[in-house]
Length: 172
Image (cartoon, rainbow, N blue to C red; front, top):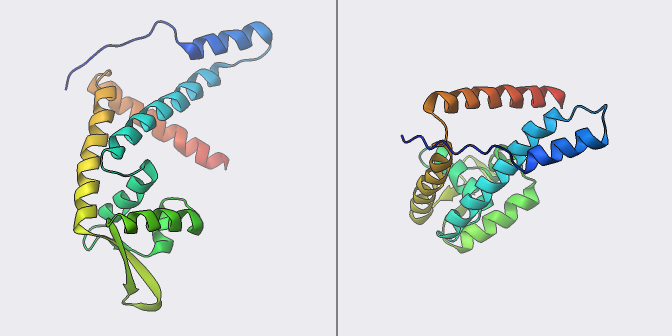
């Protein structure tokens, strides 16, 4: 793992925080510095991954469906309701993604053998190939960015973000 110490002295978020401090002397805008960077980082990395996934003819949302099926393990199949719940999607949002993936030959809908009224969504062989290759390419994007930090800092950052996610979950 290479360490590429790209450290900005100041960034756009610093400017925003300073503007708030100047305009509202009693305000403590420090949380904006953290969450503004988290938001911007997520957007930049997400956009980079979207470009990568486009090389396989899929969007990030479609990748998420394929990845959930692949992570489910053999036979790489889930009920639509379980798939939607795992991805925090409405049934309408899931249906649109499944329609596109099925037209592309990446998933198939089959009757659920344990529930006459139900369906199972499963990866096709082509879908499995696409999700595995695109997952590797997406991870490469993430690795290149994380390589700006030493391994111990990457682990520490992961721990800190886990704690913030837990705190945010407790707030809702």
